[in-house]
Length: 161
Image (tube, rainbow, N blue to C red):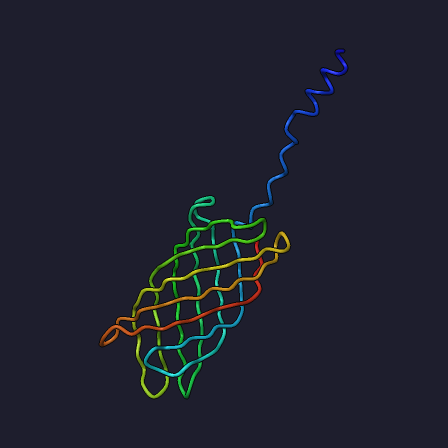
């Protein structure tokens, strides 16, 4: 009888909790491709780099990034600091929404520099503990002689540590 009671209790017990997925690395470096469509200028493509740091565990990540975009006889260099709020949507998939200041210098027929604000949605996939890929569509508003907007997207591999 005692054996039956023990067997019934064991069978009724909840299964052991699955191990938690490994967290994404607290820091990441990435290099990849970037593209932009200024709403008042031609399209362009180039390179993008960023370094990301998890400032508050699972609450706030800071990204310092830069791009060089070329289009129709002009080059655009930009740098940004984006504060992002991360959310894990699957075991190896993270979605972040963020915003921050950006500085853009354009070189070509005219030389301009402008401050602005950038908003981003960042999707990071970590198939390996220290190796991942990202896609980050952005929208920025530059404060030049009048507000000017641009849509952009960066994509590429990243390394975490």
